[in-house]
Image 1 (tube, helix red, strand yellow):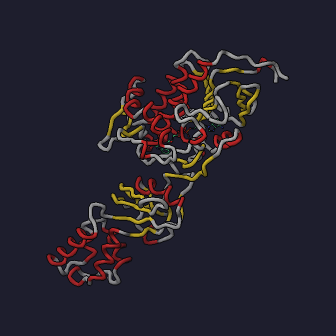
Image 2 (cartoon, rainbow, N blue to C red):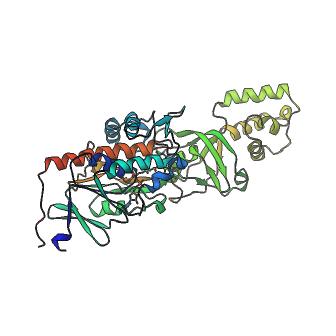
Image 3 (cartoon, protein in one colour):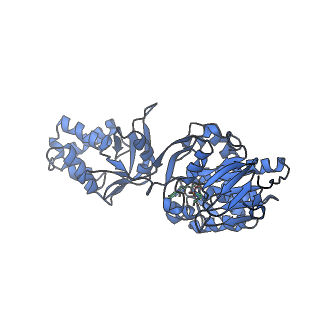
Length: 422
Ligand SMILES: Cc1cc2nc3c(=O)[nH]c(=O)nc-3n(C[C@H](O)[C@H](O)[C@H](O)COP(=O)(O)OP(=O)(O)OC[C@H]3O[C@@H](n4cnc5c(N)ncnc54)[C@H](O)[C@@H]3O)c2cc1C
């Protein structure tokens, strides 16, 4: 390749998603020549659909233990370097006011992800060169620098931040090619699975509840340690189960599909308190149908399904419930196994679990331990969190940490020149 066509940059960022845009704003605030390469023709396509277009940008109560990762120290470092509070001030300084909901979830006051994306782009584009429609196919080490190859061109830098995202919603550009790039360079990819994705069922009775939503607790046995439980809204759909509670448990079911997902439709009750309630109801209204009574506690159609599945007689009245039937009813409400037959996959998953092994990156800078000068940020790393702003916070925190690391490397190094083609 003729020397004149070569572009030498201080830092090259791959991917204009949440992590890449954060890295670009940080690198762009330094007197460095920074290039951002994005495979799509528009930046931030996934960011724009977050939170149903409202962008759940973070949560004030995020803690590193909420994330799934075997390397909590890296998470701790990233969150200490760029915390949810820092997210608030960072965006406010760019003119994006955030508001917290009662559960700590943070959204832009405009309730529009576009506001967040526009602010990042405005800031980053001041000093960073953006090249859209430049999908990176290969990264090679070449004469002590990294050569980043797109379709028709190559770009050079000693420092690359790879922010290619995961595999979910591939139409937004994160099609998993970032993992291939990391693997080509010698990195281990912890097996990938879709996470935060709806679950499916073949059971027509549960499917018949489509449209019903209620707050419940879902549990699944874990292979190591106590059962995993999430509480929150569950939504019955035409092909299964969705809603935050289901999305949160999905990654655990996908890893352990032989386990039942157990629903507690009255998470404020336990077996003793619920039995007491049932006995009191039977005393007060012995001729009332169990179905009618249960409908005062859970949505009527759900009550009907539970009765069908637990009691032989749908018209059973409270006063004639046998002890065995009462026990069956209590189990049907508080320990109800949901017949999950599958998961929706990457097309509907909010994130990808698995990714570049955190053991292979420096826990303070996110620099590769295998390829000096290569940094990672965002979903490409083996980190995923529950619904509620955690995954974007990881993108902000890791994007910041990797950018600071990359800037540090560039500042330490003297400018370099490529030799002519051999
Ligand atoms: C529907 C939906 C709703 C969500 N809602 C929320 C929410 O409200 N709150 C929350 O915290 N999280 C949410 N998430 C998760 C969150 O969006 C992601 O975790 C986050 O966007 C990851 O950021 P990233 O920069 O690592 O990856 P991405 O945002 O996926 O960005 C990666 C970028 O890299 C580009 N790229 C990939 N490969 C290449 C290549 N080879 N060459 C060049 N460019 C490449 C892609 O085109 C893409 O633009 C949601 C996800 C989805 C799908």
